[in-house]
Image (cartoon, rainbow, N blue to C red):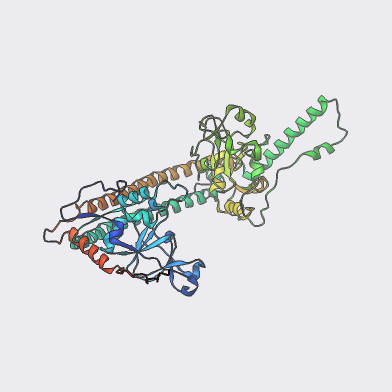
Length: 521
């Protein structure tokens, strides 16, 4: 046992340290999968990390396997040799084929005991250390595994430990499943809150309140039409001022044809909206300021090699999460580079949408964000606040199933799928009456804050269970989980017997003399 894998804790008197190779035989039986199409196919992805539970799997034929795989038999352990820190090992009671990235193991001690030991933090750390510094795809091999230390108790105690661990960990599994159900329910509840908000079912509509209060209100369609007319009027006044400054006098109104109306929504296949709502395109809802819908710099304008640990912030995909802004990975650029790219600034109140790689995440730039620019993977939308609040626009992009269907139904490209500005501009957004928007946003934020509080509690609970699982495993393999029986045969005797049996099973090498050759004169 090398110094690198030397164990770090004392054992009870009847226990012994030994090596992986002493108590485990690694089976290698690669076969052509074509002849085993109806057999189960087990890969690392079919094993749950940390728990060693077998997840749903398919047959060799269903997975379309073509490369050689290991044939395993009932009672063996299947151990994932890639990424050992992921802690994946399962005990099987059936035959099948497993990935070449796994080892079928035959245990010379209790398989259940060994299974639990392999899932312990101590074993995983020892294997990771033995695997060395391969960071691209950490992997172990038979030579590295051979010297990894294993704590071996007497045979009867192995059974007692395995039984106790099964009991304790089964209860932890039940608690974990309960918390995961809560987590899933919270996710569904969050989606239902967002859906209700963007479909007019979360708060009373402005039309309903106006009737109850016997007052007038401005429907979204009327508001939209008014704002669009005001924009055109501002443009016309600006163009007239420019012409007059040049001494030009328009003879007719043909110059007004230069005005580019924003894209109008195609509502032929869109669902009906609540009273007082209307459909509007992103381009209609965006401000009429220059570059109100814009992605970050492309090509040589901003290279990854220009990122540095200090300087001005660059906002990319990692910063735009589902519904919130995260500092995430802080890519930065020099002051000089930032100044040259100032037109791509991420301004407080802008709505950000990811359009490449991870598509469709949305958030609002927080008011306290430091000066920053966006990358080509992110689009910035500056909304017309007279029409729609930034958070209301963000909610529609984030939570409306209809908007999401439009978005993902138009994703382009196979190698690097994404959205472009034209697609984004023409997305149809459900627009509530202006007075209703603030109430919707307030109700959503109230509901989601409760969800976030519960999600934090669930996350802490799952983390606590994971730590408790490892604590129980540590107690078990330090000899503290069950009582020792002085009448048990010491593990040293078991290991000596294994050594003798292994030596006896080795083929005896006999000396075969070479035939004598006749010397010639």
